[in-house]
Length: 178
Figure (spheres, rainbow, N blue to C red):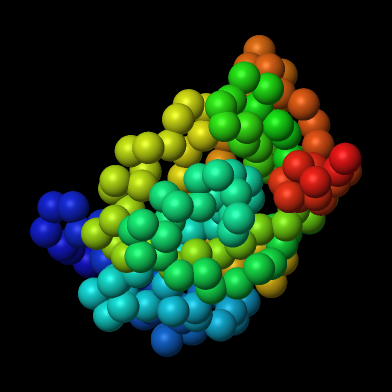
């Protein structure tokens, strides 16, 4: 498959749709691909012009950075949880306070999330405002779907000061603990 420069997201969306439609096997093997329902965000970007993004902290409804989503005409799609393979940390030096979610398949837990649908043409400006060590990557949801979401680019032992708050199950529970 080919596409013009900077049309990678649309190309990947079309490939995913074709893969689903034709029930293609995993790679060159004969192993059947598990069937998953396609969410609106998994349709070609040109079809809906939106990207689902999972948020777990300061961008949640009612939190200090939620306006960065609503000002970009994002819509709340779902309140859900991650797959039980993540740890949640408070970034101790962040202002405003914010968490970092790290994948931990061996000793992870499920973290409360919100999934927002953001117009594709607003994703770049949203991404540009995300500070180190955070970024956007793929997050596995409790229903086994993968969506774009906040990830942390360093490990818990990297020297970046952070506190493990996984036992609270989510950022709002941590913030409201007192």
